[in-house]
Image (spheres, chains in turn blue, green):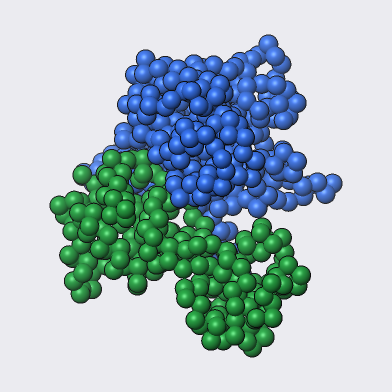
Length: 406
Length: 211
């Protein structure tokens, strides 16, 4: 029999020392950022009922969830997503007078083969959600927070690509094509596969202008100028309103000085089936996957029993770390601090010194029986500490600093 | 300026891909030299190339290790990677087919198929699951798939058919076509956005040659 005790399961990883310190610094920075802009942090359980994601709701594919049973034989999952549990919590636990609600979260999610984690099965997501309001200002606010979040992690070159799901839906309603065909067109556009889109379109009679626009959809991305070229006449009311909404969001982002981070892609029609309006994704150099994604999900909260529009985004911390590494932007996070050791009878002096140092914000470690001054100096060197302080029985102390005895 | 990295499929596809890229204004001379180098560079255009096994090309592109790839549609269908599939290059044309003994011709809907031999397990599985709504046993082989029905390993096979000669010489016929296959240009989803201008130009230059 093979023994697995020394391995970790597929897709999960230990995050050690320097990397963990860097991860916590990013997380703390993001928490600080979100709360400074008025978002209230919340936490939902790591395990949830399967029914909140799969089954009748069908929000997440069955194959991508870790499943197990509770004591009553009910199916549980490790949460594959942070937004759905928040929607559940808000629908069931938040009273109307508290809406709109701006909340944020940082937590681990679990998914088999999920791209958001860069092929990891456990990954940390940080994000914000605004619930209970449907306005271009709220959508722009969420995108602005996404921009600030990426910047706060130390990434300078990135792009937030904005799409509008309702534009595609509106156009498809106008064509009157059956659902199966619409799905095939959506897949083609999502892959920017002109040939596939054309093949489906050639099977049907669709008016010239509309057909041309649909064939053009895989190409309709870049800066916002592409929007002005779209003729409003053939596309119908819904798609036209969707474009106006997108324009408003872009105007707000321009006023907020964020236009240079923003681009548009009307062919962004990924199959995240809970999005209903504005959608977006963030990209940077060095990683082949998006580092964040978000959008409006007005229909999601109602699946848990309360009508409530909502929008939000989530960012993959592991992806951000990969990007920082590949862009050579990893800050040198050298440990600083002192080690306090003592001869017999001097423990109380050493302890008092240590406590005082910690009070003053200095990292200080009390000797835990390392075995003499030489061993202490070795330990300090190995751990990157800058100073060793030795207390003698009479209360006098001697210091060994980097470059001087250490 | 950053390098744009292009992954090419080793073998037949490579030569055709190289002439297409040269036609689009890239300098592939390093690539055509016989050397042991793995990565070739066009310094003027800041483009790097490498050759990889066809099945690996979509993997390199999905992870962003290559920005662009040239690979057959058969490999894309089998690998199921999340990519932009921007151009049908039109060459290396063939069909992905279900084939079997002549007796089965026209009877695909009435007989129950239980075993399918193929080099393309994902394509076969998807086809039988979604198009035929059947659960079949997929037997993965690495070559000479035509042998399987002849020696009773499986009832039918799923394989690429170019002229159909190997099939007919062994008494097999095409029972159904799953997909038309040809070479495609694929682009990483992030690269397409971060390097929109340069990659867009390259796609356009290649497209012009196909007209």
